[in-house]
Image (cartoon, rainbow, N blue to C red; front, side, top):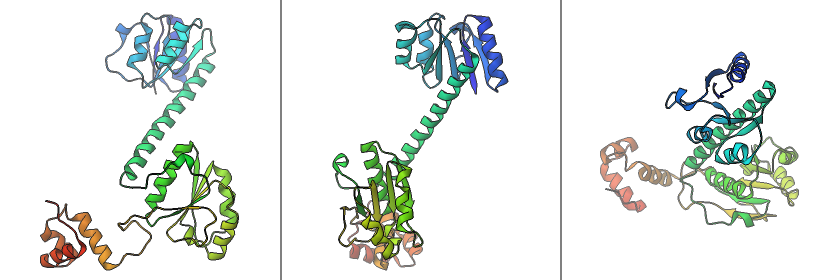
Length: 295
């Protein structure tokens, strides 16, 4: 963890550096911009507002944790720098222990922010191919039942709903050995409970579960239709079937899916060989399935 201390009170800067070094931080001290190495990244900036042009440091190190070392609190020394991107401030004189607490707090926040952005990007990538009907998620009230052969469709609904309502959620996949009571107890884990693969539950447990649904914060997913559902039902099934669904495909459906997915990647000779059929058979299957080869 690299820390840059920008302070023109050399004794104070050295005292901070000694304490942080004991805790494992790699510290550097500067009293002006001229002493800094160009294009050097620091995890933490301890920035004295007594240093001339201190606001420029904030502009150039927005990705770092920036804690202002202030002699007094004012619009110029605190309010405007915080608005410009500084993370926090501490007023002189201060206990180094309090400064360390602030560093650790904002360091942890940055780590969570980085992880959160990575997860959001990953989720967006995974759900990019999912096409759901246009829904006003803010008007949907729980509980709801999702009918979807593709698990990704139910995932997409869950993320869109949770984002629209700013809700945390907890996920559980039902299994034949689960009972309704144990699953329903999980509703206290988060604002919203997502129960996937509801069809795996034994029929008796399904009935018990459905009897306890009233106004509970639940999103339930199943690949099978629900008889006499006690809540709103959303059919999220695609017209196109694929291998990621829980549904068993026919040979023709499987063949159509493979041809459609790989015909842009492999020449007909290679694709027909991998499928164990002739090029003529491949042409006949395209005609049968209504598939046009993209050139």
